[in-house]
Length: 203
Image (cartoon, rainbow, N blue to C red; front, side, top):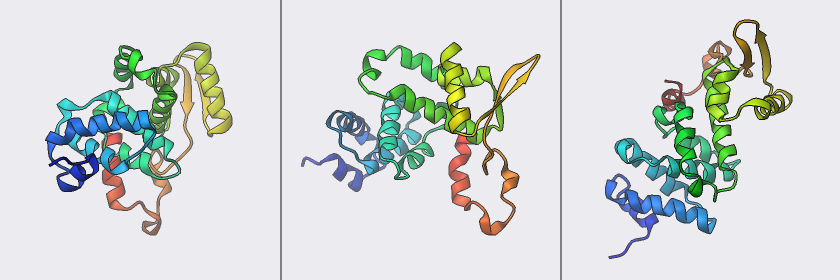
């Protein structure tokens, strides 16, 4: 019997045999401008069980489709299923992406989406970082990096700090993750399941 991808996800979402079908379905979503959060979340969960089979390109496409669904919380749901080794090794990711421009260039906004994701992870993890770390994480240097920083200083609450010996630092706005002391009341606290889902990013 022939099943649709949605039916496969419903019947047996933890079967690694459906992984190729789910990857093809992600590409189909890109080409046909359709979207299935359930199928994409299922694929990300399977990647957790089969990390050696994970495709960085497919993960990037899932994140882009999730960004396009905003203001729905899809991006966050996908983000928390992505292993720390992918979320933190941005330099390695850009090196791999450079080898696949013929594939990635057909998706408008790819670099901007990954840059936004990198900034999101960095701002959750650090209070401030050296300019060099930001440059490596978002794959921008020189005047382009100056403009990127200036834009976020003007629009995102960033600040900069200069050290004579160590150069420029980027200071991120305070939030409950990079300044945990802001949450003092248990009534205002983050629910435990939210903390456990974000720990892989902070690791």
